[in-house]
Length: 358
Ligand code: ADE
Ligand code: ZN
Image 1 (cartoon, rainbow, N blue to C red):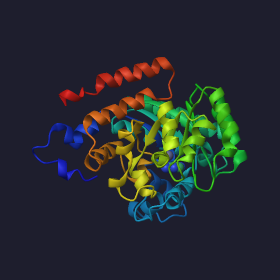
Image 2 (image 1 turned 90 degrees about the vertical axis):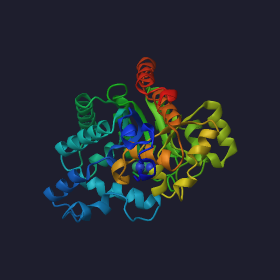
Image 3 (image 1 turned 180 degrees about the horizontal axis):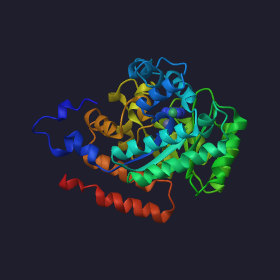
Image 4 (image 1 turned 120 degrees about the vertical axis):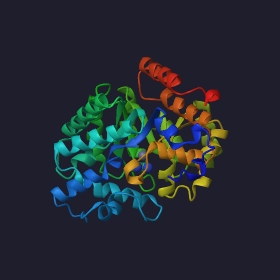
C-alpha cells in the first residue's frame, strides 16, 4: 500500500498507517484458503515435492497470489485450485489455520469470522470432512486463545464443487452449529453456477440457527442479491456491490437493512471494478446501505485489513468517522447470539476513539 501522500510531517495521527494498524478492527469476510502464509506454502511445497516451482518465494508467488494476472474471477479462483494441493497432513492444516488467525491478530483484528471449505481442505488426501472441520475448529480456537482475538468460523460451500458433496459438508456444519461453527456461506463461480440447487441447504442452515452469508452481486448481476435474500435466507451479502445497478434490489436491501461485506482490493483483482476510483463503496454509503469493510483473501491478494483501510482513506476519501461506523456495523451484524453481540458492540464503542477527538 502506498501511504506516501499522507505520511508527510503535517499529517494528523489518523492519517498515519500506524494509527490504522493499531486500531481494533473486525473482519467478517476472510477465507482461510486465501489467508495462508507464503513462507509456509513454500516450506510445504519443498517438503512434499509438490508440482509447483518452489525454488523460492518469488517462483512460487504467482501460483498462489495475484501478481500480473488478468483481472477476472477465473484467474483469481485458479489460485485456490493450486492451494488445494498443499493440504497434505492434519498437522499442516492445523498449522495453516493457527497462522491465519495469528496473522489477523497481528493486524489488530480483534473479531474475525474466518470461513473455510472443508471439502477444499479434504480433497487431495481424502480426509474425512468431519475430521478436517474439527482440526480447523481446534486450531483456530487455540490460536484465538493465544493471540487475543475473538473468532467465529463459517463453513463455505463452493458453487462449482459437486453438489452432493455440498450437502455432506452442510451436514457437518449443521452438526456443529453453535458448537464451533457460526455460519454457512456460498462462494465460488457465481457466473456459471447459479444458486438454485443450494436453496434447501440454506433453508436448513437457517432452521438450525446458523448465520447465512452468500457471495452475490459480485461477479454476476444484482439479481443474485435478491435471490440470496429471498431464496437462500441470506442475513449478510458477500460483496454485493453490483446491487447499485438495480433500483428494485436496492429498495429491498434498504427496506431490510441488509449488511454488505465489501472487499475493495479483491473487487479490483477480479475485475468487478476497473479502477479503485470507480469502486461503488462511497455510493453505497451515500445510499444509506449498511456496509462493512473486509479483506476476502489477504494472502492471495497480498494485503492486510490495514491496507484496505488505507485504500478506503487514500483512494476513496473515507474519513475516520466512516471507518469507525463500518467497524460498528460489523459488530452489529456479527454471527453471534444477542448478548455476546451486544458485548462486542460495547467493546468496540469503547476501543474506537470518538470521531471528534481523533
Ligand atoms: N472464494 C474466495 N474468494 C472468493 C470470492 N471473492 N468470490 C467467490 N468465491 C471466492
Ligand atoms: Zn469471499
